[in-house]
Image (cartoon, rainbow, N blue to C red):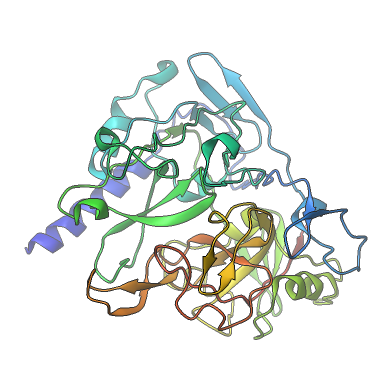
Length: 411
């Protein structure tokens, strides 16, 4: 067996260990009940970013996340640094671990006796993203930033700002990613074995390489992990009908086919607000966590084939504003501000970036940099083609206009 084949076999076995849940998990939740936690977003925003009074139904920019919040987050702190999510039924470690390699995760979880329990595990990406709080925002300066996790209940610290690499050599403030147990079924950067994680400093899901890119992939990557216990969470129960897909786990009904037209964010809100389909007229643009419930990390494109997308490389809009962006600066003649001019999308197709390959060569090309299933954001007002080389250090693909699947409450 080749070294690569051995590595893939080992990775697969490790993931199986991480996802095993003992019958004695001890945090009861109804079987098949996938309760989606609110994003926490409680304000409406203009396309240029400023806060605005939430528009009345039917008016431009109505149907935003704050107008359809869903299940409000509810946490309870117990002794021994444990936090119970009263919506999902999951119990969490209040404090994340020190950075460690992906290979070390399984033994770390098995050895944990936090709170006297012996059934801790590494969370799936669906479980970890359930903690995201989109009241957060990163400005480039921790002193003026707010984490994308509720720090009333969960511990969080920005990187020490002393450099790149693992904790021994310092981390940029934004380098505080946390591992999940969910591997990417593809490769990032055309070659890298990758595992999805959440960054509670910048409010995104991305795929992170198993080997450390800061050390030219010579040593394992090290990220923190926040252990969880409880019944498995994030499993859909789809039932397809001609024009819709019902999810009896989340209680949501979805538009089965997109209309084939990529739209601006404001047009996406309007489209769902005015949609009449399958005899219903109460459709809306899903918020980020509702949208994330559709992501299927077992395939590329990252969505169940019951859904019929016109473009297999689609990114799908959410109604959630992303209060984060690079510090105000010009790049390619365009400037981002530190307001709410971005909106969250799910990369159903591969999450592309325009990268220099190999480094220092001057040759750039589009690569899958973050994996199908990444949750990123686009400027609400960007026009298609206005960022021909992407944006940021990994050249994130900014399409400006994305596709839409509308949602409504099933019950």
